[in-house]
Length: 224
Ligand SMILES: [Zn+2]
Image 1: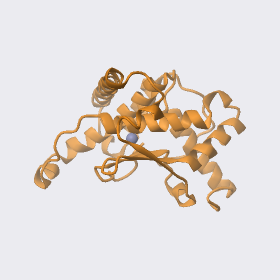
Image 2 (image 1 turned 180 degrees about the horizontal axis):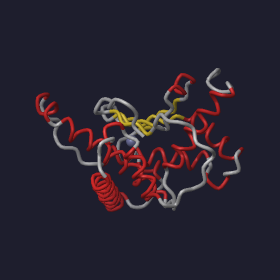
Image 3 (image 1 turned 120 degrees about the horizontal axis):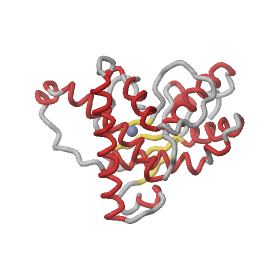
Image 4 (image 1 turned 180 degrees about the vertical axis):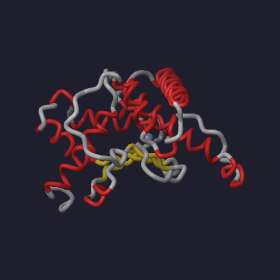
């Protein structure tokens, strides 16, 4: 979901990866397969063998469950958005046309404790899903909560102290792997917190489909 070069350490993306548009997809209840595919789609994972992909998905699964258990123990079961106040986080709604170049549902900025939610993509995807007969996938409220839940993991996950520049250079391969594991964990965490029986990666796939459709039709990205 994070695309291309790794963003700054404090910024985490939940965004559709670049790629060819697929035909309208149906829910893939094999969420684990969706996660394997998402790992393999990452440029830094291109040379990983099956065992390495499986190990990363296992690690992400463990991370998602550990973070969920920690959240529930500390704050009880709530709607994702209802944790924000106690966690010292705030939401900022954004949605500008230029974000269609690389659309994202949400971002987390650790430094300011802000979750940026792209209400434009959420609104447009909600309409797109309804227009393509996938009413059961959506409400814009659900898309918003999935996005916030995803970013909650990036906030909750324990982080080691920032290493020195030299250590970062020496550990760059491991840090690329850690980034992938955390991203998959965030996807899985949002699925668990929302109680979905499908992977939220379905929304990523649908957003990619929408972005391509929109480009073809020229009907999006021209107004705010
Ligand atoms: Zn993320």
